[in-house]
Image 1 (tube, one colour):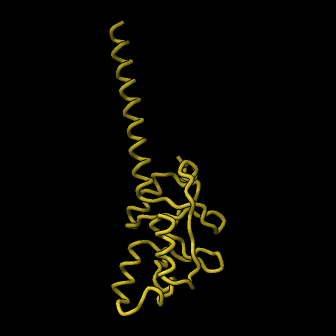
Image 2: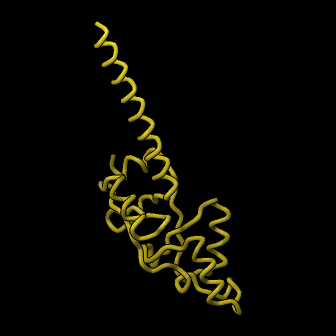
Image 3: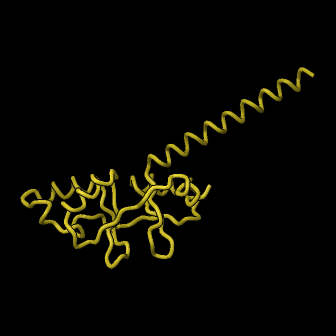
Length: 149
């Protein structure tokens, strides 16, 4: 299955925010939209990601400063690891595991069209395994029935 197929099934919105906004703005957006990460942009172009762990890093690095005084561009993870819509789910899963990331933006024509989470991929994998096990049980039953004939 391709990444784009899973994105269609999920139908989830991706949230973004310009890098000149504050960490406080980003935290409010994460909370209001019930998401754990957002894409950081400059002139609508994706330049980074801001996730829950970035909140902790910012706190530890800038304890004396209020989140309202810290620019989002200074707190984001600037290395944006991405997937393409036609990538296979297993490839996306391997990328996330090797990079140790929990969110994988999907980019097409320099625009973020979706974002996969580790939970999305685990859920997909569990469903796939359940389906495979069901088919194997049917196959074994059919073989057993054929042996009785």
